[in-house]
Image (tube, rainbow, N blue to C red):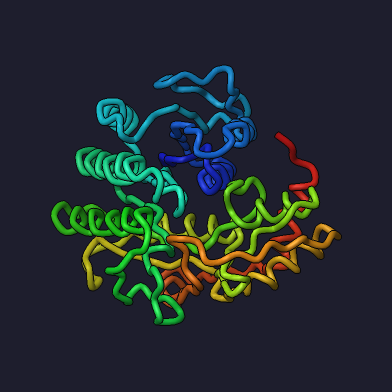
Length: 338
């Protein structure tokens, strides 16, 4: 298949690109390489897929130096004209849209960025899919759409009408927009609500990266809500496996919402924050200095994925334990530097 992945300088996009390249798919990556976090990490991911930082220029299609079936172009999804040209010229079979402005707390301070990237950019993707006979659009949603739901575990059938951050609202909007296009234009779309993804080359604004760095440097680990938090941590390889299987599970007419489906992807075993910190301590062989703090604005107390629908659809459930996943991350962490 010919597959476009948006966000290939990002955490999940990078790992997915590696997997699809290895499987022999003709793969094109897109990313705007913004500076939400240290772009050196983004360039390091791109380098692993054979894309040299010094060769990158906006709108310039680059052939990977290492993989004959991979190319990369720097683009903004908001750039409607450039995106239309890309789609028309390439005629992709599948789109995996992972590009988005991430971060719950950042959305409180920089709301317009989320509308530009997550709403306008996604609208452009939908329109390009509609007009270029794309067979399947798979896109990233988020567990954040559940907000402070009291219904545990979180199910795709739950109402998610009360987001507590603009980031969550933008992801819910993506789901609604996708449903509209599936309904109006018979465009097959699949939304994936990711639950706290972690692993090597992870985002430096996420808990595991922040905690490992602080513990390694002997600095305080910021423990919000005084540690009374839990997260459904999901290892990156499990997320990628789920995406790859979903790509081939194209929604059709004979389902409750024709051409539209939505799945949670999570480990379904929430981990208490203090247990998570102790797991990192064990992996690093060093004790953490704890700084107990109140709840952050826009944060939620717990996340917990009900993955029964995913299991029924693609016969898959994430399996990597938190101990194994953290161990793999810290092995990478000890060797990696930017």
